[in-house]
Length: 305
Length: 275
Image (cartoon, rainbow over all chains, first blue to last red; front, side, top):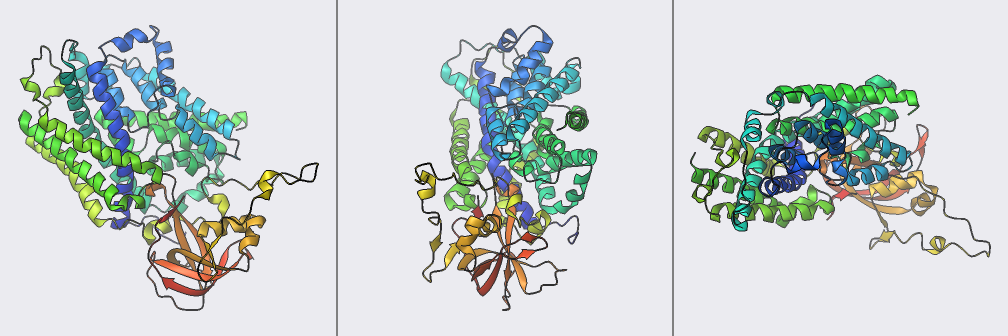
């Protein structure tokens, strides 16, 4: 390796930092505007009425909601915060949060296009399947955890005390309320987004990416190292397949792990999740996803993938 | 912090973000950061953020409204210290970064990301598919009748105006190679010196950044230029190279090599990225 493994450049860092901010802000804004509308106009407990009574079926259905309500990984966090506030069980919200950036039509099309010539249908379906499976498994795992161990204190108190019934208020007043909620959510999430983008910009510009090339030789090492790489790069789920498709020397299962882990947990999400969840839960979620996705993808090798 | 101060604080932060986004759109700097398909989203966000800021200022205060059972978040009163930290995180980094950022990557990131030197490594590249065979009545399929060199344009001196990516395609695909090989071409790109351990000291790299969504996913696409003349330009500065395109086989693979007649500094092109 000719260059050192880490070289920092402030102008390059600023450039990468700004580019992710400029790309991500519109999607966070959409998510927070939606969260304001949900908060003001979605009657409490309506979510629960529409979900199957059986918790397992409810989680399975929530994991597929991204096909109908597609969201990117940045925009989905403020939305699930308000959905939880409106009575959606936390496990269902987590199933939707983890799966929506993968199990959504835009990402499926981009994955198919990116892998043309490299078994695109197989790649797209395995990404969809593993992404959905992991979201459901994690949601089932957190289903029996008490909310106070999962949610931040502020979010938890909103869940337990919110009983707003503003059906009689004038529309203009309700729109004003929705805007206030949207603005509060936008500012909250943006703080974490800015911090996360700083960290990912630092690594994506300073780390010598030649480091990962020798790791392609072993399935286990390749899979887990590409997940670390996905976490560092913090790519948008609509574009990450184009990067993964160029990692020709890496085995299929390693690229699959890259495509499933990245949209569920990366450096920017590590911070954004902090707007809703307790730090300890976020850390556990990260480790759990890392191990679960890695194990599933490596085991898929048995099926000849 | 009182409700009014909180409102002004939130409106101020939103306004600054709206103005910053609007500035990037109006100044044209946005083109150096995002794929064109994302520009409209940034422009709309700028307007929405400014409108939200204005809305916050002119909407009646929540406390003034009749509210039988308010929810907690509407009364989320931040302490002045917390608001100051929030404002610092939300405002300072974007303002500082906008003033420092050179609107392009320097040599550090290009070296860290490594060059794409063969078209097979390019994100979204699809291998060339042979055209359909002639039909039974000896007529050509419609696609074969098209002028295959229509994508080539020339400068006033008659040299082919090419991009680094064109020459990478040409190295891989014989049909395209025939359009360039042995011909005079003009290529604009960014200068990067050859590898330090290279034995061929008369060579440097001509780079263009390829992006999918934004500069954060940019990958440097490079061809090799051979020249005897000292060029003395700084790393990653824009240059125009004219010379003869060749495609020798080196280390077992065919590579594009531009044998330069002239290397001159130039302004960045209108589109600094390749897509």
